[in-house]
Image (tube, rainbow, N blue to C red; front, side, top):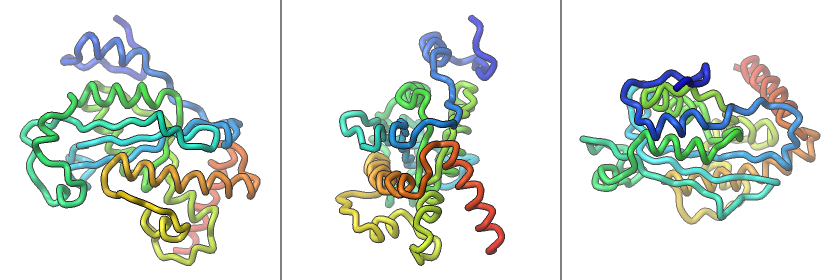
Length: 233
């Protein structure tokens, strides 16, 4: 069986996984898609630690934004099976017990299911570079998949659109308080993905008011914002 140029077959890849892998949608190319019509997948990960070179993804939570609304009936959530998972300080934060990790979904199956959910949509996350690095490494390790989907960082989009925020290195909880959002639960992947999606809805409305109407314009605005941040350091 031949695969696309961006796939390299793992010697341990199951045949059923290989078929699903080859059928995954290609990465989207940011262009003139209107933001108010764009489908985004908001993702959050819980991990065994913060070392993107060696720690493991323990759970994935994701929710869809489409037509400037959260698709409450279209969510993704799974815990990954990790053999010999050791209890660490991270358990105090995400509260995923070792028994749940041991009974979780096989990692390859979890990643394939997640990417089938993502389709050809861009990804959103808060501090997206961490989630991106973890997913890129783990999916490459699992079946040599080269994740090329664009990630947009809500932690950058928020200060771009609300420069008057006056906060120093604001985190997700700071933005929740800034906008007065009502949050019932935090620090699990699904709940944090939902909170990030709620924040993004506010930002999409602000972007429209500021004339940022499509992904290409958002890309340019973010690049200019990053340059300005570098000059103020």
